[in-house]
Amino acid sequence: MRLPARLVPTLALATALICAAVAPAHASPAPPPKTPEAIGYGGAVSSVDADATAAGIEVLRRGGNAVDAAVATAAALGVTEPYSAGIGGGGYFVYYDARTGRVSTLDGRETASHTADQNLFLENGVPLPFNDAVTSGLSIGVPGTAATWEQALRLWGTRSLADSLRPAERIAEHGFTVDQTFRDQTVANQDRFKDFPATRALFLPGGQAPAVGSILRNPDLAATYRELGRRGTDALYRGPIGADIVRTLQHPPVDPASGRLARPGKVDARDLADYRVIRREPTHVDYRGYDVYAMAPSSSGGTTVGEALGIMSHGGDLTDPVAYDHRFLEASRIAFADRNRWVGDPAFTAVPTDRLLSPAFTAARACLVSPDHALTSPLAPGDPYHPAPCASTGPAQPEPYEGQSTTHLTVADRWGDLVSYTLTIEQTGGSGITVPGRGFLLNNELTDFSFAPIVPGVPDPNLPGPGKRPRSSMAPTVVLRDGKPFLATGSPGGATIITTVLQVLTGRLDRGLSLEQAIAAPRASQRNSAATQAEPGFLALPERAELEAMGHVFASTPEIGAATGVERLPDGRWLAAAEPVRLGGGPAAAVRAGR
Ligand code: GLU
Image (cartoon, rainbow, N blue to C red):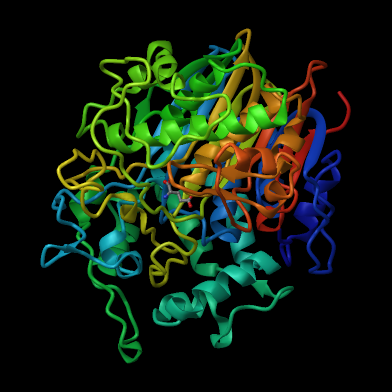
């Protein structure tokens, strides 16, 4: 969390009107106290950053709706969380419209060039080393984020793009206070950031990672936002910002003295001009009387969370912690086996979205779950076209690697509209390549493709292709009850996004946890691999020994996810919940305490 340096009057005004959430801005650069829960009227915002949450609240307070506020929040995150999100990347936007009762989604995923094919990441027939691909032009897809903002505002917003970008523009102009998380992420990237002069100049001032408490300004990004506001996203998809993006990725501006080989990318001006945000029907499952809506492919978020919920719904009593954890881990394991076999960009492969979510298929897969023994991974996929109890098809596939970065924000407004929006530039720091003079990093999203089939001879729906979108794990989710908004949630964390969202949803819906408790609870992530990743807090749970006796194997990992959410309380107030600790914690805010 960071405070803007010279935004004190604006933010002090905004935050003074926020009920219990974002701390008032002081002249001191010390980070504000963490405020992971806020309850109030008039709408609410939850994100991982104080400036971003305040930007969204400011829009709501001035009469904007959830979509306006979500775009303002996301644009601010592009300034203060530039290693996780920004106009160099893409994401998925889920919107519940209280007036129509409909849930709509936007797929703003990055795309490969029309000149790409399945050999994109092969050299001499051999897959490139993963890290060579990450820090290269080759991994950079056509960014979708600016187009997502513009389209969301056009379809459902009440503000112009220029108005929505203004709070973020001010933060970029005046600077924000560097916190420990930002510094740590910079240090972790220092070795590659230093090799790109534009990245070095922006994020390694004086050649070093900025100190905690120092002010980081980004006037280039402020100017880029201004240009987008003035000219619309044509400036990026058909104009000078786009020309700079193409030049940068085709000729990565690496310091020749560094000796780094940064391979050129293929995306060109035509790819940018052809880019389209896609409106998709959300995935939908009925889970214990709740309607759970999420993102359909090209993300695997909705199908995998939804399939796992289906498998969990065929189980018994989930109030017992051992029974719950066992079923959660097994449902995740099975759903990951299926997503890797069946889910990719639906423009290239027939993705059986409805079949994966059907009660017939989830019952057939739930048949595999024993009450007292863990399954062995890798587990073979099931066949959603021919669901048969406990049956599988083809060989098991190991889980491919996926980076972990990304950010999630959640907004509710006074009319009852909800936005759940996850956006990313893929790894923390993306490709590491900043567009010179423009103030933003380009993504490395194309590394989410399989570089080669995971198992030779088995169809892999996630190989690169011309104009194709790599499969994502992002899982922005909206839950309705009796046709009314109940909650919205999502998380960063690469493939662990899916298990985190599943854990938050079932923590809230099955275990009687509050939304804040469900977000804070210790996490584990089973993704069809021999060992389940688990946080130290999970490993310290009393049920661990029983789970191990059942055959579950755990590997410790420091942190999984950093979710946010909002929930409508029965008395009409909004509860906003943010991550209390992970990634430094995030601020939740409601517009006002009283009616
Ligand atoms: N590239 C990942 C995805 O689309 C997101 C990156 C992350 O969350 O770390 O699923």
